[in-house]
Amino acid sequence: MNVANTSEPVVSNADDAASIVLDQAMWAAEQGTFPVGGCIIENATGRVVQAMHNNVLKPLADSDKTFTYDPTAHGERQLVYWYYANKDKLGLPGPSELTVVTSLDPCAMCTGTLLTAGFNVGVVAIDDFAGINFNDVPPALRGLAELKFGYYACGEKGQDPGTYVRKYVGGPDVVFRETAVSAQRLVGCSDIFQASLDKVRTTSSESGLPPSGLSDPAKLPDNSPVKTRFRSVYDGAFRSKTPKSRLPGAQLYELLTLVKDSAPEAKNAVALLDPFGNVILCLADRFDLSPVHTAFMNVTQSYAITRHGLMDDKDTRQSATEYLTHPKYGTFVFLYAPNPKDSTTIMTLGAYGSTMEGPVPQIFPANFQYYNPPLEGTVEEFRSVIMGLPPFYTQLAQISAMKVAFSIE
Image (cartoon, rainbow, N blue to C red):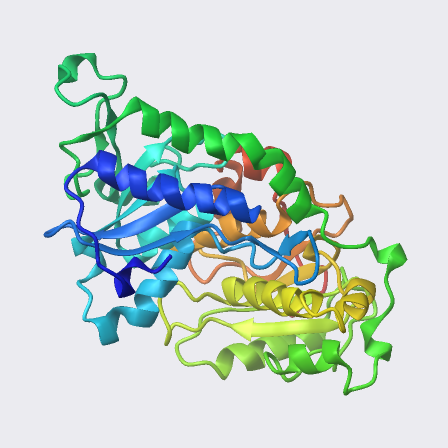
């Protein structure tokens, strides 16, 4: 729903804002994706600039099934990307003058995205499994999170604030921080998410054949839809190969370095290898687009969206099923391990967890690898950030990052 291009509704309190994001969550549930919604509100006026819901899963054409469209397409992340794509032509205020109101406690990816962009954040319902409120962010970011995030009070109009179910906790610039959401809307935002969570998560995490059931896409002709679609994103798709997908060597290191150096202001590059060792994508940061267009975000989004496009076409669905699979069976290789003190690292780790959306096959070496230590900070600090994430990332997705076995020295 694009409210920015309709009547630009104006709201005046937290409960009305909660109503908007709950409606978005309901539309997400109807679509068959994670039932979470959000909106951007201008602090000074209460104008609802934009509202969006989760789009991780979308229906396939001529089918009753949904399929992973973009594992990063959470409502809050999409709102931030939308903002950067439209801020100049719409003359939007800076992020510090806006609040992203969300139906559910943002996950690690969305938290990192929002902190990096600088938005204020108003939260309706709590998620203690994947949500990362300001008490759970790394110490280096905790002060910023405490200033930017706010958890709305819960109570009824006219009720003594001393009897509220929950008092407001959070930063001073969150819109409507002096008002409360109703218990009905708070429970609604929580219950609708929990009602279909397991089903949606399973659909996302099991969207692909195991390697034993796949065919090698390197054997496809160059004019095959699989190759041409991915080469429209990255021209080198399926042109190079690592003999063992979990043991990348010097060739991939050189490719990652070349890709990073060719992108303006890029600090990192990430490659995705399929189970056969084919380099599907190798992309760098795109900070010319926004501060949240990091290499990993670009890779995981591009892979999923391109794959969904092939699955969404009945003429290419069979080849997409036969030659492409869930990235948990492949290998993500970073040129540099993420900086442990940077908010984009929380975003990256969260996006990785959302890409997996379930247990990662316990294959050694790991699905998440890097050649070099962080440009700032240490590997030990980076691992500490991973271990401090909420249970979804440490217990379900079981994020584990390791150095590439190949020595670059």
